[in-house]
Picture 1 (cartoon, rainbow, N blue to C red):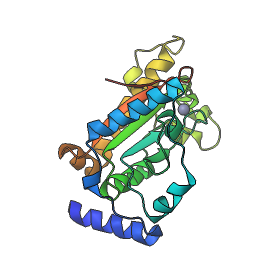
Picture 2 (cartoon, protein in one colour; picture 1 turned 135 degrees about the vertical axis):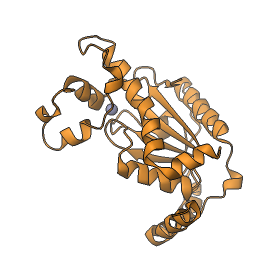
Picture 3 (cartoon, helix red, strand yellow; picture 1 turned 60 degrees about the horizontal axis):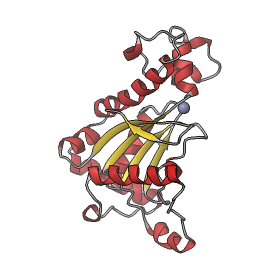
Length: 223
Ligand SMILES: [Zn+2]
């Protein structure tokens, strides 16, 4: 299906699901500009100068539609809250969450909607320090079946192979695995989505990965 056809289908799905308004692409800034705004918001968060008050008066406009400039893949961890950490109001971040912040098919499908229909210019893979999901993947890297319930199927999707040189007993291994897993999320999105990879090639979308330090609150973009 051509990209225009896919967008049409997604738009129809959005309409049927709740009347989402199509994004006004012209009103959004460049991908680099959106990233700069998120990092500026993180600085405000670090310094206690948060500006996103989510005033009641803003609700009416948001109920009519959404055009979030950025999307985020976040971990389910309760200490990871993109709207707070990037000091952004409701309606500005299209947040998709799963333990380990990995681009599962469901997460990718959600992001395709964010990009193709809502006009997101940036997708942030938001790793974080002390991630229990990545720790589980590292600890059980050779036998995730030791984990209870449905966890093996999830933890198996966390990318550890690129850290094979890390010793699980090395205190730096978890941080290395967290960074690696976040970085690999970019490749996972590009491989898993023609819509996302086409938008990146066209210069309409930027993908970045980073890690939030839970102690300081600082979000650092991985290079
Ligand atoms: Zn986590």
